[in-house]
Amino acid sequence: MAAAPAGCGRGGVSLCLASAGAVKALALTAFTLVWTHSIEKVDWQEDWRVSPAGLELVQARVKGSGAGMEPPPEARLVDGWFQWRPKRAPMQEVVLGNSGAAGEWRLCSEGKCRTLSEIFGHPIGAGVTTMKVCNNP
Image (cartoon, rainbow, N blue to C red; front, side, top):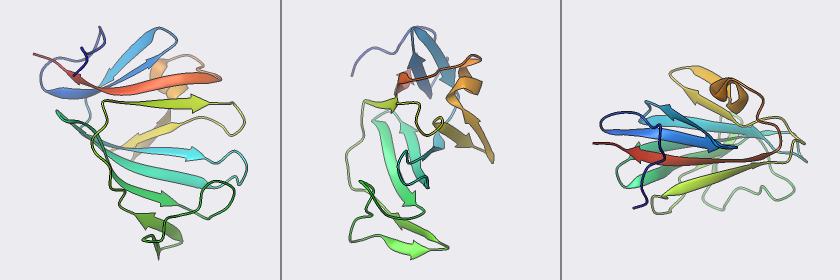
């Protein structure tokens, strides 16, 4: 496993976000990542777990279907959302790109959502943000 970025939290595991040279550590073990599709203008949500094995994608939901966002065959319509459980191994990092065409990524936990700009304390704009697990002694 790659070394955790400098500046991440202490003890256990936490979520580290890196963007344009800045790093933020969030003491989370689970979160929902939310964004709006740039063409279809509908929300997409993913539930993630932060573990020593990496970032685990637990469930995905999309409010509709369309250009490049067709739900898989196993998806079920529940309360207006197509939802499913992706089958993939934990990931060491996830790169979030932002074209600036559909608003910002939002990270939600404990009933509160914040944009990446709010988390970093300054505008993120177009570019990339990397999410990874911080493993700290």
